[in-house]
Image (cartoon, rainbow, N blue to C red; front, top):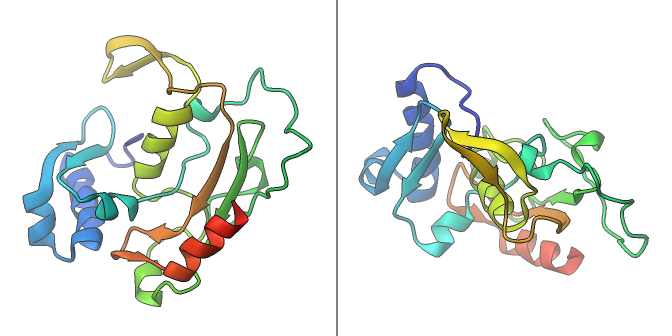
Length: 186
């Protein structure tokens, strides 16, 4: 879920189908699994997926207001992580809220990486949605298309985040080696 990057609703829905096709293997399966395609006020979708399929859509959008670091003190000195940069994810993408970010491609098929951001950046919005639901900071005047404006926040809004992107949304591909490396780093 996130800001829509196209004004034509059919283009936004096509992107949702592409993301789901990469996980489910075909456009037909993607169209069968999608429950809703949100394409007017924001971009997002609801789909029937298994837990492992949902995990293949990951990453983060650091510019999301949920990850604003206003009011945070310095990153704890005991933190030994790092902020790996890459495509559309630079050194300022990490802050006092997102204190670490890494991405792993070892063991992932080259075909699965095509069209992906070679960085911790979220391609489809799923990782951003999950991270903000769990640890998103307070966002005032949040709404859906201007309706229901209010305060949005995650379950632990003052928590800091470290992001480990191991699954790639263009194919059902999470490299076992990548997952193990991320666990080891975490």
